[in-house]
Image (cartoon, rainbow, N blue to C red; front, top):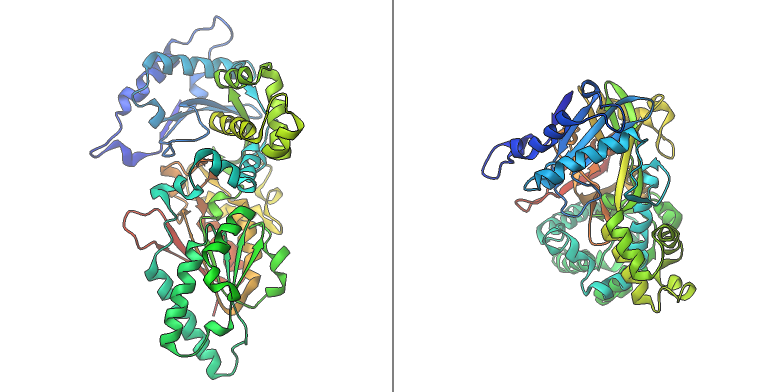
Length: 491
């Protein structure tokens, strides 16, 4: 039996995990397993992997068993955070139930399965994520809180004045140099993807005006600031926030993975693209090397039996009818769902309550499927899976996010940049593949959306192949998890 404790940093220090107490009931259950209802698990072929799931809300249970399609050794996945302080008898029962379900083919009778197995980026959790941004106003009305309150600290970590002043100062230096050579375009474009409530744009524009007056070149007169977001509600808030700059601001409802669909007219014209807390919210697969072979993680969403029973009882329906209602919610949204099924949802708030209850209960099963060569896997359109090989071949088993949505967005945004343009991204970014080995990087649940850390080395490889230098720097505020990723055209 192979046992891997990934969060090594939590084994020492003031708040160290009591690893013995957390794992004792797990190994006790493994040692006392009997064969009354089937063959005993072959412990010599079992892999035990322990993580610390730092997201308080997530899609995991403390004990899960992940099968390997094709007969490879299964993985008993443990969440040390969930096990710490848990009832030992409950942990033992969880281990026994996971092994029993695996011997029975992997499906637990206590789960209401909502979808078929599929790569992680195709899971229903991303349909829920889209639903949240499409109907954000209804969610916020139900919770009484703005979406930023779900972020650590209650606001975006990237909205600070000093980095804004530095960015604008660099732009002025570039524009001054081009102006001296009579090479500066008349129109100066800046694009923000994922504009949020507009506070970042407002701070940036206010600072730009102040610095432009001191600089004396009247660049503000030529400035065009384009705010882009997936959510019409968010854009409406942002427009109100920057109304003092209305003559210089345009807004676009835009899918961050397809920026060229709306912004193709700006190819090679944008001097600055700013992206904050967007890439971590885009669909992603995960790939794992197990025994020197690459595997794709497949997932399927489910509702645990107690939660499924409670939701169904509240609607007066059988549990098995619940899956079809979830599908309708994801397809129609809460407003149309209330119109289509008034017998279950007398008004829109009732449909939103159903949506929130399902999201709160939602969990994921996972399994590993062997890949027949990385060259058969597509990261993003035109980007082959072979680009992952140097990241996966760093010694030992590893499981990492592919960040497919971020890779797609990044690759399609780079062509917007002027030869002297810069892309700057503030997000939770893995900057070294080894970081995937020693801590859990998602998926986690925010209030209604999904969050994963971004595979920075992969984006750097993609940028390099397209002629861009990509660098990473810690964000200025002490204790922040945010990284500043910058892409510039290679000299």
